[in-house]
Every structure is written in structure tokens, then in C-alpha cells.
Length: 521
Image (cartoon, rainbow, N blue to C red; front, side, top):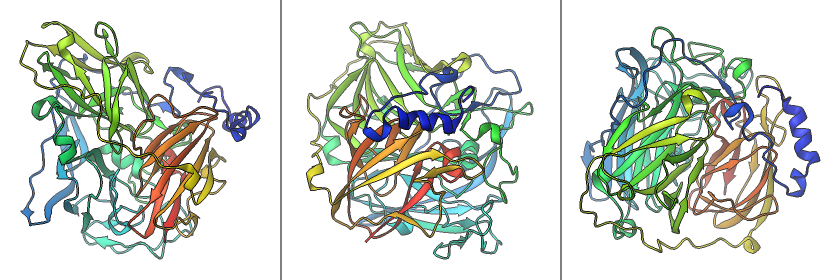
């Protein structure tokens, strides 16, 4: 952010043609991060990269299985863990770990999750990417209060703002996910209004993988060759605790972060599945990497170093909402907060004994490297990447019932991140889509804003005067909207009537009011 005034940049965006459909990424590379935000430095020596093994989050076992549903329980609790070697760190975790345990479901089969809150603050659970009824979507004011609490009448940090429609429970809440959607890499995380950034930073995030028959029929890597990788940056205080610049350290009263970090919080330690810069030993065969950017604000450009002979080492087979119609080969992948990319890496293109590093080309200093693979040995590999994958039927913009425009911009102050000139208000809906209809939304930005729509998946129609970008294929629920850019997306609103939100997934922007409602009818 240094050297730029936000309002000036927005004026530049408009003057250079955003409203006319010209996308110009003015902020790319600013400060060496290509992210909107400020780096928060750790206050203790950082470990050498590639000295700790990669771990995979445990898969959660159902507490009960019925003919048509699987039931799970998660406890949100504080725990002390070792993230940096030899240093205790207090986290908030699902079942006391970070990332939380992975839930594995089947497409079309209901998953029921009972969340119990033992933390000292309210929580909300959101299944990100889930096609979910509003009652279980994790609306940000539908709080689970700590045991013994009384229902709050106002929203902390937002004086005078009340939500009479909020459904608040004490101690626990049950979420029901019908999962009438394709196989995909989803994730779950806290979604409490005004405090999502702080809660996720402390550890409230985990994978939810949906499998399906169509995916299972493909010769893709599976088992221990199917690796979910949650990538997140963090910063540590001198005592080993997680640093975060909350206005209110108790996370009870005043939402948001201090002014220096209002653009977004960037850490200087890269964690993969909760381990700093880990190393993974892998045989020289194809692996499926489920890449999730669970950072608050940091964007990554991920590449293999060295690249395999001939290049194209990252073969994308899936996006946020499931598999693509066909594979796409990349030398690098740009991934914004909340986006997921399913990629195949053929380590058989390297020699046993070779080391391959997943690097971040948007990084600087300690954030330039992410993860290292050590190729161990040759093994039989009966997998392949099919030339075609499940069909992704295109939505027709000519059949859209309406086209809407959403402007994401900064207006200054503690609630300055706004949509169409308004901060979030629980009583105001920016859109009222009718169920069964298709809509086109034009999204316009000042800075980097990863835009996330709840309930629906969408297809990207265009960026500026061009078609979809290199990384926009398939079904998306989060769009990496770049500075001074206009993009158009198309979605069908189906199945569930109710109130949902869309917002910037830079969590500091979201917490400081860059969120709005749409209500399906």
C-alpha cells in the first residue's frame, strides 16, 4: 500500500477505463507481494525452511451414520501446539488442531456437523463452497455464543447496528449440508461478523472434501498420493503467540484491525498444513495437490523450481467448484485468498534424489518459498490425466434475467471497505435473485479483492474486454478481482430461498464492512 492513496487509485481506475470494461492490474507487484496489505513481522528467530516434515490433517470419523446422512461433531477450543520448533503457540482450533480435521463426504449424501463452542467469544461456521440452505450457511450474525452467554443485542464494533433476523444459539449448533453438488475441494472456517480475520488467523479453518462417482471413475491419484495442502501466512510474537493487529485483543467488543493493517494482514511465515516451510518425501509418480489459499490477504504465484523438462509442471484438473472440462497445463498458478486449485504434478518427470521446491513468485524474503518435495524412488504408476474430464455446461448470458453491477472500493474510516458505496448492513439486500434464474454480475474493483459468493458457483465470462483469464476455468465461488479491473460472472440461483452474503475474502476488508446481502426468493 505504501506510496498509493486508495481514493486516488480508485479515481485512476475509473479514469483508465474500469467502467468501460478495461481491466488494468495497477497494484500487481507493489511492495513485492502483489497483495493488498501490510506485512506483520515476527518477533523471534524463524526456523530454517525444509527441516520439518509435511503432515496431512487427520480425517474426522462420523459419530453416527444413517441410511442417507453422516453425522460429525467438532469442538472449537483453545489449545497449545508447537508450530515453530520448540516454541509453544496458543491457537483456536477445531478439535484443538490447526488445520482442523478433514471431513470427507459423498456428493448427494447429507453431512450433518454439530459444532460446540468452548472459546471465550462467539463463533460462526461456514462451509466455503457448499451449496447450502441459508439456515446452515453460516450467516455472519448467526452466532454460537460461549456457554453461559446471553444473546447480544448489537453487533460488536458497529454501534447501533442490530440484526433482528439473526438466529443465535448458546454453546452449540447443528449445520446440515445436503451437498447436492459435484465432487470438489471445499473448506470450512469461522465467519463471525467483524472478527473472521482474527479467528481464522488463530486457527479456525479446515478441509471438507467431497467425492463423487464421476470423479472416482477417473484414473487420478488417490490415497496417500492425494495431498490436501492448506497454505497460510502467519506472524509470531516473541513469546511464540500468533501476532495479529486487532483493535480489540479480546475479540469481544470492537471489530477490525489497526489502521496500518486495514488493507490486509500479511505474515512472514508460510505454513502448509500448519507447518512452516515443510518438506515432503514423495515417490516419482503423479500426485494430486489440492491447493487452498487460506491466508487472510496474501496472494501467491506458485511454481515448481526447477520446472520439469518441457515445462507445464502444474496440470490443473479442478477449481473451486469441482473438476474442469479438461486439464490445463501451467508453469505457475496465481491463487488468491479462499481459492482452490486441484493440480496434478508428475514427479516421474524428475530423477530420484532430486529436490523440487514449490516457490511463491509473488513473495519476498521468507515468503518466496512454500514447500519442498524430495523425490525418493521409482514406483509403479497406473494413474494418468484424462484428455477430457466431466462436462461443465456453460451458462448462457443471453438467458440472464438481469445484469447487476457491484463496485468494491474504499471510502475511508473503520467501515470504509464498501460495496456500491455502502458498508455491510444486515437489513439491506443488494440483490433479490429469483430461484431458477440466471444472472450476470459485473464486478469492479479499486484494489485486489477476492470476491466470494455464498450459495452459488459461477462461471467467469470476461475480464475487461477479454474473455476469462488463465486461471478462471470451471466452476468458481471466489474470483481474484485485480486492481482497477472489471470482470463479469454468471450464476444460476437454485434450490434454497433465503438470505446469503457475498463479500471480499481479504478477511480484513470483509471484517471492515466489505460485505453485502442477496436474498433469493
